[in-house]
Length: 147
Image 1 (cartoon, rainbow, N blue to C red):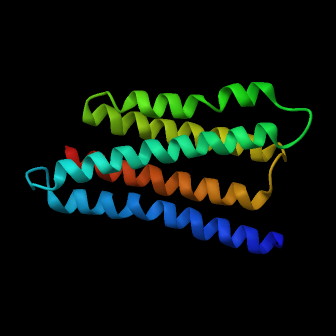
Image 2 (cartoon, rainbow, N blue to C red; image 1 turned 180 degrees about the vertical axis):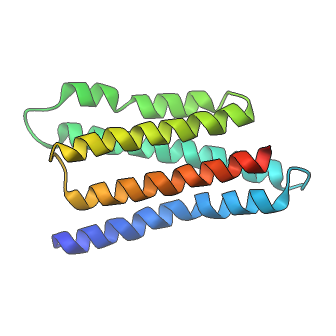
């Protein structure tokens, strides 16, 4: 597959991964906390968020082992997003969403620094910046929905 095809496919898959965030955030804001479906949809949002943050950690794992010499420090750090994502699911709802928001922003910044070092393709940086912004916005919407 050519680089442009890979970048296009990565954009499509990334935006598809964002769709549950968008749908759930808007739905939660529209429903209101008294709706019978609110709690279930809110739980789905939290779990999806934790899964995607874990996926981002997996991407970092892949970066760390992609080329020799291996980046042991990044390999060790790559498991932190998964660990923290699952831990914050145990917090009260508002703190969970706030913590996930902060973790996504930190991960986006971490990826930006890595990308700026020239260690991955520039098109990946555009995806990560865009998706970090969109996912952060979805979390802010959910914070308004539970307020």
